[in-house]
Image (cartoon, rainbow, N blue to C red; front, side, top):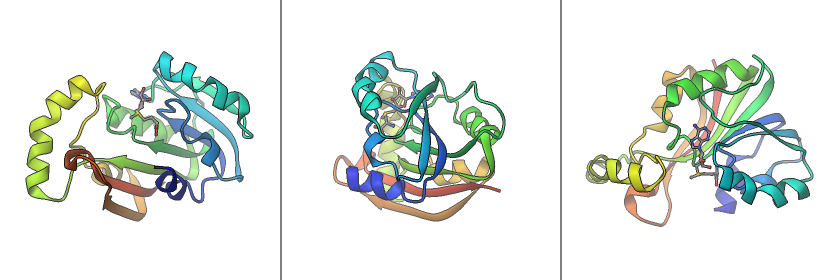
Length: 183
Ligand SMILES: C[S@@+](CC[C@H](N)C(=O)[O-])C[C@H]1O[C@@H](n2cnc3c(N)ncnc32)[C@H](O)[C@@H]1O
């Protein structure tokens, strides 16, 4: 996934809040224009797995919050936001995107790389069908979110939105990537 992550992060700069920081898989891939990473991650296990990567990171990383639905950062305080494979999992995505809008500086954007609802009707039907199971076994992960629509409905304008498939089970392999800028 590194090439996909790297491509999705092209153009990131300044102070970046990473939603769902996980074990820090993106740390070494940030462009050098990024000056600080503000990590939001609820899982204690993931945070402890990220410890070494954070210590060795060339870009300073601060753990600033535990929940994207309510982030203890000032209004208009970050330049950009990064989210990779996280918007599927946050329970109240509207709340999280409204936090992102509040925290972003004017002109800021969300750089995203996410899996979501397939354009193929047959696959989409199976995604809806399996969603309750995935939700239970996948730590709250949803298979059937229309990431692009959710971002535009939340007031973002999509730049270069891409949809593509990656290898793996069909219900998990419809990808959405792009830059969603504050309107
Ligand atoms: C599939 S993992 C992806 C981790 C990482 N972003 C990556 O690309 O490898 C989903 C992440 O979202 C985090 N998450 C779940 N609920 C969240 C919330 N309310 N706010 C922020 N992150 C959340 C999980 O703890 C987990 O680290």
